[in-house]
Image (cartoon, rainbow, N blue to C red; front, side, top):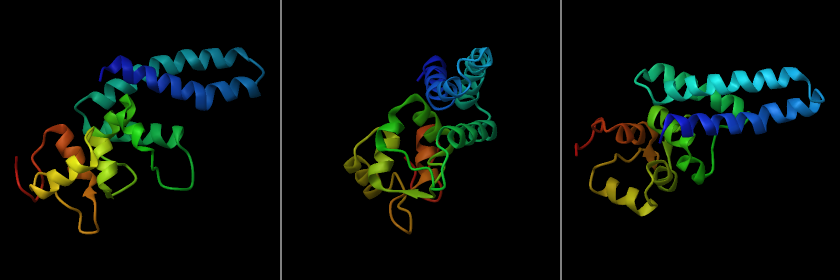
Length: 156
């Protein structure tokens, strides 16, 4: 995933979810054009942060984007295909699943880009830990995507 793809997705999402409705509400006010320019510049910085080495900054940026793009009273639970997007891949790598301590094998597969059966095989071979309440720990998926050794389990 490139920073340009990630920045492009962020710009498109913010256009659809925030700026287009604001433009309608403000009846095409020039201020919305200024906001579009600002979002384009910031999206490049957010993408760089999300793909960079500063874990804390990346997690905070991911949290702010998710809270803005997916507001609601329920925990963030995107559809499986979201994890294949540039933003989904960046969030999985930096934060795991931000709304869940553990995820189902199907969600883990979507986050890792493999099948549910592939996750089952990794758990069976000790390459991914099983969460005590079922599924796979979100942190283990994040660690695997980063290439980190599993915590408290078997090493590859």
